Image 1: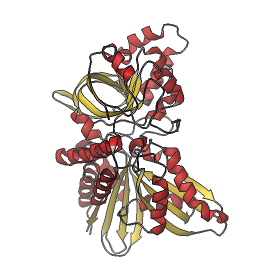
Image 2 (image 1 turned 45 degrees about the vertical axis):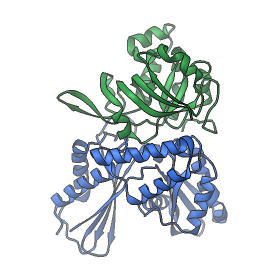
Image 3 (image 1 turned 180 degrees about the horizontal axis):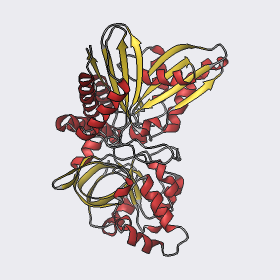
Image 4 (image 1 turned 30 degrees about the vertical axis):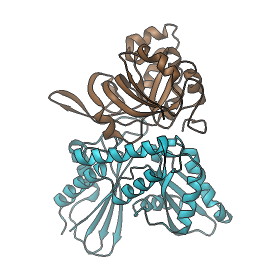
Length: 194
Length: 267
């Protein structure tokens, strides 16, 4: 089992290493990740409809989607005097986001963190470019310990679970590489949407 | 006489317990799985056990999907109540949302407008003069891959295959290793309810039929989080009830590895 500890400010910093990752490797991330699940993906796809300047639209909406790993997660957070604190933040089922795979086309070197795997279409967008990392599902308390702070929140109108959070993380893991840039997957079947 | 206050307070602390502490049966089965596995499958189970330790220590929810609170109330026929159980349950869940805390998961099914947390409550009349409470926070990952089927009377030798197929299609989505609640018989709705009630049992106690289904599920090799391994399910629990001579209702309620449940008696 190869173990990688990746430190980065943006995806470009680690894109070479990400392309070298193999399904079954274990990864710990230190840097920034951005959470997004069903409603945020829906909103992004809606904004990109009928437009040519897709990556400019993304830059204007949520630039971190282009430069940070996307974490499929609806965290449990609490507001206190110091701001937002993450109480529990394990991954949500990634397969529900299969239908928004087109967003991955716009991200130059996509890294997705989630659980349960994703579709063959997503595998296509990861090919030669990125990877899908599986964080242990349900390990919300463990994940919260690796989150140093909430740096930014977008779209709070979507509610606690569905809003977009930019999280600073240290040693976020263990993430198992579930799908790599060379078409290999540990999920021994195509993970279709529900 | 059971007071509303006592009911509400007990329910709030039960919800906190269920969300933050795993039962002995779950811990034991996870430890056995950890010993059985190697490589990344072993590492994943170790993370789940470590997560349980942290959650218990810090008294925080194990999983960010704090679920829909499913509340089972067995009302002793000699118990005296002067309050509305459903209203008191909703109040307890509202308080728990603040203090545990819980993620507000309930939405209107069509508009998707958030409604905080609204419990699902199942009441039954039983012997005695107490209220026996059970709380099972149920997340969407496991619920979404559960299935109910109206089989035909001649299908009884295909029940095992149907159950295994449900787990196979679910793959890594419900956070395996899973617990599998199976309801055979009753009516369309009753089969699903007994499948869910089955999940309240001590998961270590399985009969030959249950163990047989468990072995077949584990031979699928889906493994922890669907990443491959020997342990796809930790337990299979079957409940059986009489049904119509022309029907064979079958329900499979999948439960994730966390199998959150807590019990108390009031009055």
